[in-house]
Length: 226
Image (cartoon, rainbow, N blue to C red; front, side, top):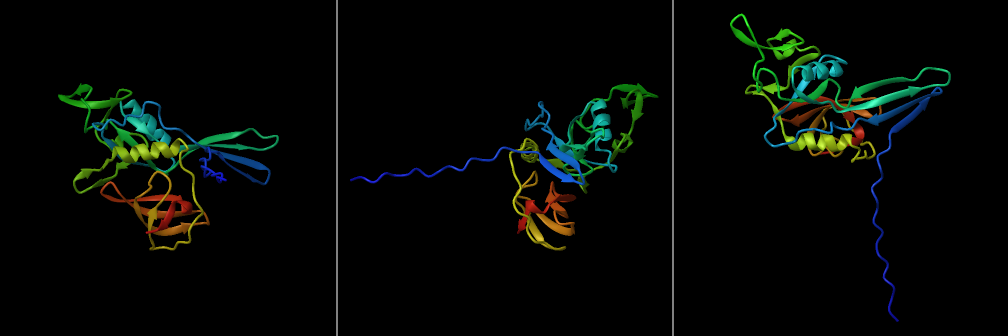
């Protein structure tokens, strides 16, 4: 008699679910915003990492788009509801104070106006002479050679994360100074050094990326021992 062979069960990936927490009768729902539908990942397209003023990613995004740039702001939409109260909604950055930009002014675009025998870029008719003149922008992540270009593969990985294609794992135990590897989220595979733990769920780390070290706050569940 032949034995019946059982096919191994294939574990299906769980669909992404918004994060819902309830505290003191208030419900907080956090949903990742998807990447732009027209996100340009052509190898010839150059992406850079812009550092913004506190809580000014949205302002910087709009001002840079007004200057003719393409932007990608990884973020989540927060909805807070409570009985007999008006819902509160806002967006928060996946990486606070950072957004990705291509077609940067002063580097890759033709100037659009002549003023006093020189050509300048304008936003709403106002001349802009330096990237830091753009509202909400503080700087572009750089090293001694200039602005650091973000690999298109990194942009694609972050876009995949925003689309809900990755889920976090249990948080590890870490302490300041630990060398770690990012195993989940948009910075997956990059090395990081822990600066400090923030509460029980997050840590501030220095990510070795784009030719330099970038400080970001990420969930502990995205880290593993290097």
